[in-house]
Each structure stands twice: as C-alpha cells, then as structure tokens.
Image 1 (spheres, helix red, strand yellow):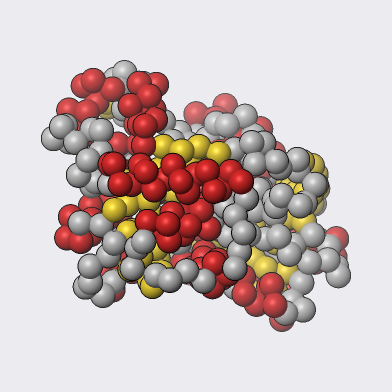
Image 2 (cartoon, rainbow, N blue to C red):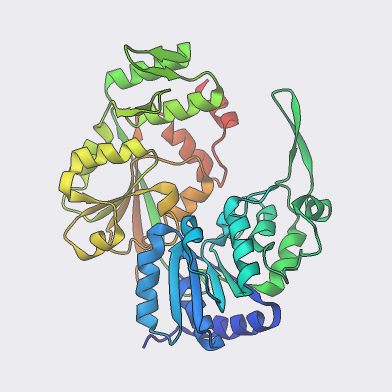
Length: 409
C-alpha cells in the first residue's frame, strides 16, 4: 500500500471537503507533485465505487500503473478524451479530468469541453480537474474548463460572451482589414472567484530541488536545404515535376521554413518527405549508448528518426521503460503532458514548437523529487529559425507571425 506524502494527505482531506460542498475541485498541482495519485486518494477517501479517468492517450499506461500501485477499493475506467464516445453507459461517482486546461478554448467551447459537459450532465458525477497550468495563456481559459459543472462559480452566465462582459478586458485587433475581438484579457478576478474551488501545490512547496541545464547544438544542414529555404522565401512557391511547395501567406511561409530547416517538407498535395537527415544523424552519434527522450514536431520528422535509428527507437513509454531500447520519440504537444521520462538520462529536441506552453511543460518530463539535475539538449539548424523561436518561448511568449516577420523577413 502506497504512503502519501504529508502535503498529499492534506490535499486529499481538503479535496474531499470541497467535493462534498461544491461537487467539484480543481487540483492545480505542478508536474511531478503527484496529481494523479492525489486525485485517486480523494476518490478513495470519498468512498467512490466507480471512477472515470479522462486523459491523453500517451498517459494512460502511467495512470493505470498509479492505480495498481494505490490498489484502491473502487473500480476505475481510464480512457483518452478522443474516445469519449466509447465510454460505456454507467453511473460514475467521480469523473477525473486530466490536463483540464485542454478544455480552455474560447470564446467558443471546444468539442472536448462540450462532450465533458454532456457527460457530467448525464451522470451527475462529482468532478476533479487536474492541471499544472490551469491558465497557461489567459485567465479566460478557466471558463470552459468548468462551464459544464452545475455548481461552477460562473454558472449564472449564459455563455462566454456574457461572462466576458464582467471578467474580460476586451480589445479589438485589425486583421486583414477586419476588426476582430480579442478576449485574451481575462481579469485576475477570474482566479479570485475560482480560488475556493482550487488547491494549488508547487514543486518548491513539495520539496523539489531539481534544476534544468539547457544546452544548444548547431547542426550544419545540407547546402540544398538552405537553397530550398531561400528559394521559397524569395519566390513563395517551388514547383517540382510532381509536387508543389507553396507559401503564399506569412503563416504558411513560417511553417514551411520551420519544416525545411529541420529537414522535411510537406507539399500542397498533403504528401511529405525527408530532404535532410542531418539532425537525426547528429543525435544518433552525439547520444550513442545513452537512454534519451527525443521530442519532434512534425510527423515526417518521426519517419526520419525511425529511418536513422531503426530498432534503437521506440514510441511507447512502456517499451522505453521496460526494455533495452535507448531512445523514445514523442511529438511535443502530445508528449508534453501526463507522462514521466524519469528513465531518460537526457531530453533531446529534434525541433521546437511555437508554443511557450510546450516549452515549459515538455522540458520538465524527467523531473522527480529524488532527481536533482536534468539536462535538456536543443538541436538547431545553423542559420535556421529554431534559435529565434527559442528566444520567444523561453520568455513565455508564443512565436507568432509578428515575430517571424521581424526575424526572417
């Protein structure tokens, strides 16, 4: 039987009280502080019989492991959000919403938020929300995370727009000649209203003392790679015998150059190909014999890694943790949350995402309370876009077309 840490015992006690009083609780616990086990502890203390755990597909195995480790008396059904429609019809006592910030889209609710709302309505279940970053970009993201819960503090508002009347400092942006309303200016009062329902726990409060050292390697890509990038930048279109590479907007040019500098391209037809495997070859040589986690951005980059690494690379956490396979490849967005790469000696980034959230969450995948130091390696193309993107996201800013125009054009 697992023994909870003192702070987890405290959160479990407070969480049960909040659930009984309000029907939901939001555990805003930073990564590696034990959100999953703590939420299961709340369910056990509450006396739940049936628990539904919604998460990302990549995280299912680690959540099931935590459930087996705790060995509670209740039954639990774990499934990824994309498979909500497959959930068997039954009466759930508690629904746990992992990485709840994924439902934070606004001003209109996402499909996921709508499905969760319907699920809660049909079952009448109590709800535990989990996230280390409840509002990574704006306090406005909190509205649709809880709008499907009957007793949420914003329930009196018909929709996000009416909520925004009181809680958002509205701005207007001009895009392509049109005035577009910007609802990102959520007020701090949103967080204040949510505080009675939220329990926060940081790594520092939990006794973590680990540090992260970031290293940057610059790789010389093939001359043909830089030639293609320059041609696309100059002409905005490159026509081959069978395929066309088009960048007729700044957004498309930014994305295409981002691909090219890491050695892949995606054509107008939807097909993709590898044009330069220099980064993959560098990673294989530089980290030979080491157990590493590799983050990539584009699907074709995984194919490049597989071609270079062969059987030395896997994509499933269970295989990485239980076999002699030294390298695991994970897509940045799908791998940045809900998984632990504690078995890895280092994290290596084949590419970098435009999102600041991706930067801060993904680089913390190796952290544990017992581990005092982590090494993260960035592999950038010399003369590419990656170091410019890095400067933005490391300063907690998404890399946007505005940055790109300033940096590249």
